[in-house]
Amino acid sequence: MININEVIETNKMIEQENLDVRTITLGISLLDCIDSDLSELNRKIYDKITTTAKDLVKVGEELERRYGIPIVNKRISITPAALVGAAACKSPADFVELAKTLDKAAHTVGVNFIGGFSALVSKGMTAADENLIRAIPEALAVTERVCSSINVGSTKTGIDMDAVKLLGEIVLQTAEYTKEKDSLGCAKLVVFCNAPDDNPFMAGAFHGVTEGDAVINVGVSGPGVVKKALESVRGADFGTLCETIKKIAFKITRVGQLVAKEASAMLNIPFGIVDLSLAPTPAVGDSVAEILQEIGLEYPGAPGTTAALALLNDSVKKGGVMASSYVGGLSGAFIPVSEDQGMIDAVQAGALTIEKLEAMTCVCSVGLDMIAIPGDTKASTISGIIADEMAIGMINQKTTAVRVIPVIGKNVGDIVEFGGLLGYAPIMPVNQFSCEAFTNRGGRIPAPIHSFKN
Image (cartoon, rainbow, N blue to C red; front, side, top):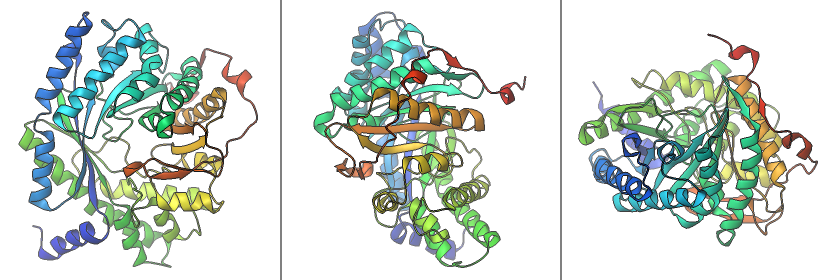
């Protein structure tokens, strides 16, 4: 039974500490839409999405009213478009048309974003995969709500370095195509290693081929709640610190479980997973960086940062996993720069660099996320950054990702404004030494020895 004290406590978390359900994401399989005729494919895709997701936004708003819990985003993820479009899309231009269809469907049903303009190329690229990747710059420039993700590596297969090299060029092209909007297109493109099939967060969400016809995945978020809880144990030992995080993570996850089960029942669509990730926003008091400061760091980036983040990530998972029947997605702590005021402050103070952020990704859920870099950064340098992050994921058997934004016309120290949940960011310096001979080698980095577990 839930007692009145728990109700009061939850209300306080929502009203004063920025507790919210960050997203309800409806995953939709488009495998039954496959057709060799492009116009017929687009018609089927539009009809499937608008039929399956017609009540998603309405249900999300009803749950907000019923429980008083903010549900910030309502989103859709689809089967990777490279698979769905392979029979009909014979050129990048064809995939751009498919992206426009996805955007039109997203507008029709009223969701914030639609993810799944994606390809899975950890071992090699088909012609369709390469055509989709080459379509990304234009597709993200001419659409508003479409998000793209490419999985270029995994612990089981290694890293496709041909795809990594190509994506360095594609990131720069995407920046150029959207330079009038401070290269915003790159904020909708993420490169993965070990991408999960059930991630509800953008820009990396897609509906995996092992999933059912449709599924409800929920992402919860409560950095402010965790920080507030830690204030009550300031100066306590690590055991007390971890127990406090575990207890509050349990309560946060219960909110997500409730919303997920209710949304599933109202939409008559199976419940998939709750993602436990602590996802910050630019709002004051909604910061993962401030949690790290409460743990005892002057700024994120100070010595001890990686250990503090590891402790936080592990405690969140231990507390949250007991609160939901199914946990998945990424689950842990996001460390985006532009979306977290505390991270921005740390960069501006000189405490946080890309190299330190890379070290932190060894123990967190995602990777180098929402980092603005100079617009004149070389494509090979971006490929090298991607390769480094993919290697961390591959060797450590975890998900890692890269979402960097080379802002055309901006240099180190400039500020770029993205707006909304994407926030703003200082342009961070990038190591200028060349890795071009490395990224030009071609081929595939083999899977690590510990991947052979059959």
